[in-house]
Image (cartoon, rainbow, N blue to C red; front, side):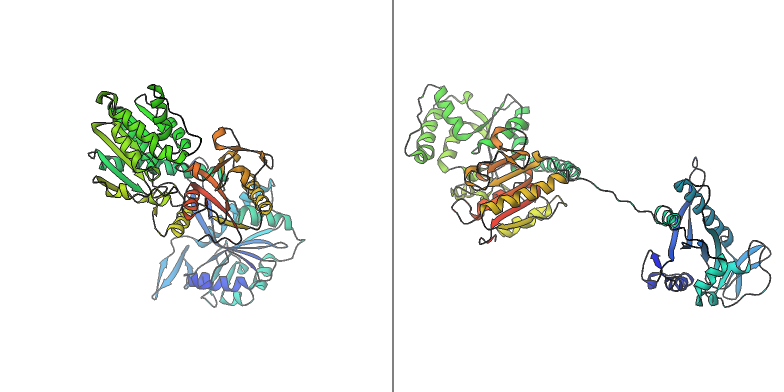
Length: 539
């Protein structure tokens, strides 16, 4: 059976004549290659090219190639013009079939010569006209045609014999020349590809555009609200909207406090909102520093640290800020990751705000890792706004988050690679899996600095204990701010994001709750790997 290019169902060919020839050509022996509907360009390179089409090109390594122009219905040649019969009358053909076949034959030959750097094709080249619906012809053929150039229905019964009669004596096979003809002239192939870095660049470009548009839309719609709580799942852009809000307020001369619980998140604020009117700070660090700056000695106890930060420190700060004159207080306070805040902390923040000041809170109930609850926020009698579009995570990651939480958030970034889930039996097996997968990604062009390893446990309690490298690439803590594969605990990285995340060490433990898994998985923007113990169920 001949090699057909393209190899398509015969019923998909609408033209009856072409369909009949395709069926016959497919039955040729294996050493034939048949190309259907071959398109090529003709014209001066300095002018606009014209696209032409050859119905069929049949190639044989010991014969050569023949261009076959197929015509359906009954066709004749009268008074120097090709005509076709329709409903008992003859009408001129729009194109001369001999000219069509000859043009294709010479164009293919010229292209072969250019590509092969050869002045001649070592085998014969021919053209033929085929009329699959006609059984015979009468009269005298035009001068440019020979009898063997005209094929009818009978010619298709033994198509190989018809082709051999056209070419005459079989020659020595020229397989190299025919491979060039087929693979580089008649059916060349190429592919467009991109590295993971290229894909990431495109993803981040799209994400930035989407984020900017959503920031503007959300803030424009809620501009008149002076006190508001924004609820949104991971990836809905809470932190970025909070930063943009702080920037807008500073542009009109407001002193703004942009605060959260996570120290690592503050670094992102400082880089993203550079204004002398905006103070970016971890809440507990900030109030302790302000008390000490004012001369109040605050000592962190050796024992009951939790009670100190939960009650003692906020109460001291409340007393201090309450007695400050209004002019020394903030015009606006923005709290990010509000689910991490205790009720007493919000009371303290109110004392830091001018009487008519603006107050905004951004929170996600699903990320309540510390069990503070959000009832106080939900019951506050202020305007509330729900963010419903995921602006960070790829579609596969959004689908995984929906399985974890049971909630569905519409993904705005319609792209991304599948989430990879791998199980391990012990920490050594987990380490080997991690090294293998990271090595595979780097070999595909991903920079090691793009990769973040997140664990419920500290590094010394993970499968990476004692390591300073993963293979030849440095392994560094996020807080070090050095180049290399980054490592961080899930809770310390809350509110932040990374292009590629390896979520490791998932097993039954107090610091590996469904909320922790949700927070860790939602940090990944483009690609996520999940490593879990073989006896631990992900959902």
